[in-house]
Amino acid sequence: MKIRLLILCLTVIGVFQQLHGQNIDLLSILNCGKYRGTAGSGLAVSEGISSIDFNPAGLVGTSCFTLSFAQQTRYRSYDLQNECLDHWGEYFQENDYSYHVTHLMSAVPLNKYISIGGGFAQKLNPYIKNHKRYITYSIYFDHATDGNVYAFFLSAAVRLRKTLCLGITVYEHNGTITSRIQGDDHGTLIHSWAQLESRLKGLSLRTGCQFRYHDFHAGLVFEPPYSLNLKAYKSSSEDKFFATYLPNYQRTTWKMPLVLGAGVAYSGLKDWILMFDFETRQYRKSNVQLQLFEYGRVPDWNHIEIFRTGVEYHPLENRIPFRFGYARIPQLYSSHHAMGEVLRGFIQVDEYKKPHRNIRHLLTAGTTLVFSKFKFNITIEYTTLQWRRYFQNHYLINDKYTEKSLALLVDIIYSFGNSSE
Image (cartoon, rainbow, N blue to C red; front, side, top):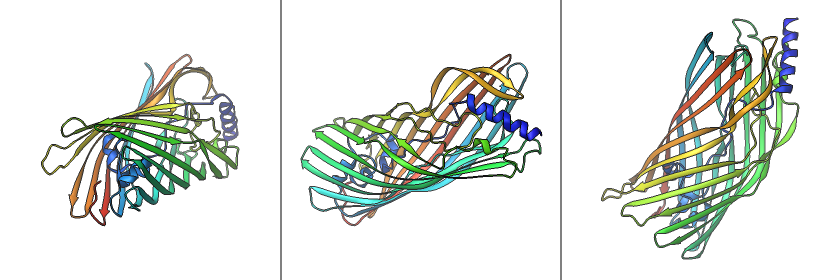
């Protein structure tokens, strides 16, 4: 009887809670090789194999047959402080590691005007982990969302004139994202769970151009909107306690945004290259639910603007470069102040006030080491993200969440000739 009553409460909550789930990164990944060291800036100056999934116009700078293999190790830490002001509070902390192969690609010049390339790359990796937590008035739960969407691609670039290059990359996406939630409420509900597998497929393309005039460089990229076809595989425990968290569709489409990026760079300072990039992603509303989480689940499908800046410095005679960068990356989830009531121990939100985007801040440092025909592009990334949730009735409930990560990326390039990259 108690379980049936709780299911009824959760169903009521689903009507009132429309937005503001826990943040996962739903933005597509840029596999840009050495330009990861400049926080993804460099649309105007990218060249060679590092340009295929970044600004394909730069692929025309390939001088010989080249292979690239990249892998990434990431350490994450999560901190959640949950408190009812002046009454009680609890602090959750955990961390984990992950490893991924991020891309395998090749490039070859056909002549001094045309180059082609291909391979596969990781494009989406949404990830979140909660172990025996609760948010505001919820029960204790274990929850995790993880998965990968990779894309196979072909790319081509052409030099129209000495100062102008054009390029295009065509992708076929394929992958699975899995989300699972399980109860762990002081020994109860330990056999209650639900799981959602979202299998995604679709085609897309990315075009780019570069213009170079003396020490000034400019670059543009454009991705038309496209859709990923989604097929949902749903399962749950016999008692169906968490079944209400599952989406009501078997098949749907995830509408991906129109992407427009622009970058400028200046190389007129001795030993320095300065880079500034701007990117806008024009999202469309989707009913896609990729994670099972009791606090909203639905992303905020509004437009986002990303700013990136970076520098490349060559201080030594052997021209070993050092790269540094910063990026401000809004997410598709928001922090907010909610007002409402508690119905039988569960939140019924009546009004959201002052929602604001969660922001991921990215700091990077990188370099390139050369051994014979091998180049090792090494990048260290540090990111931090915070979201806040205030729920107000006769108490003020405050949830403070901080996510930090440290990643090491190694991109190994082998050239079958004398590479200029």
